[in-house]
Image (cartoon, rainbow, N blue to C red; front, side):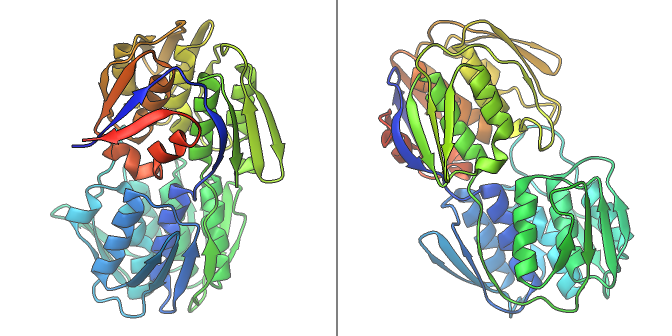
Length: 416
């Protein structure tokens, strides 16, 4: 099994390009199921989750050609609208095949999903939305089985903000008969990026980026070319790492418009952050100041950056209160950070982080994708060597992270 070896204590310095967003690429790849015409998707990150989604599409009969950061897909001859357990179990985003398959083929059989063990993320909103559009849905032997001769437009009010639920129902509505209104829709930039792709395919969508999205169904969608937006979570992770190590880092191809909540907290921690064109530079010349935060759906502070900020606060001056409101089991990284010397207490859904002047290297274990990123940040500032086990979590969401951090001066290597 592979692990990361990190010798900390070196301020990050230099320039790195932000990769394409995993959370935008996955639904956009699934959108290829909506059309029999070829699609070309560029700026696709090289990640295990992307490979899983491509394998899932190929299993259904989609012809795929991959070249560097571009993917060409042709779903003209889908053999079977079926997403098997062995592929779905490793990645929750596989549920995104449900809406497109039901809309285009009138039937879908998708395994109940797996993915990171960070809390309950039920798929009932996806199911209720499809039922509101006229689909018959049953759960049989661990599979969601949906069928409809043609979906009908409907007004769907979601009682919880759900990103994948919004994306699934938005894709399904594109081929439905009539008008669909999604109320309490997710406002995340990745939802907007998917809508851009769908509009390029001929979909009629308005309101994306707000909490009410309206879709007028069409008979058929065409092929298109689309470039995936840059990854705001990866960008935030690199910025948090630069701040924790008291470094000077410039990110190019950065998603400036979607980083406001993260940048505000970094400035509160004492970082100097400047944007120019599509680049963003962070400089931190002194020990960070503790910053309290509360996660919330976009445009609030992202839950996917909570663990990284706990790592930053672990070496900050003062005490921070980090409250998690999205997932109930997302503090599993805290126990591992304690092994490095972090002083963190858990009180309900709040982590109380008492900053210490230094951390010390140790062997730790990643428990989920963003938890592994927090361990990398802590290891970059810790004295001595830190070994991080189970780094397959990192490979799900960060493209070649050890090579790109080494580009910024980190002493990091992947070892067996």
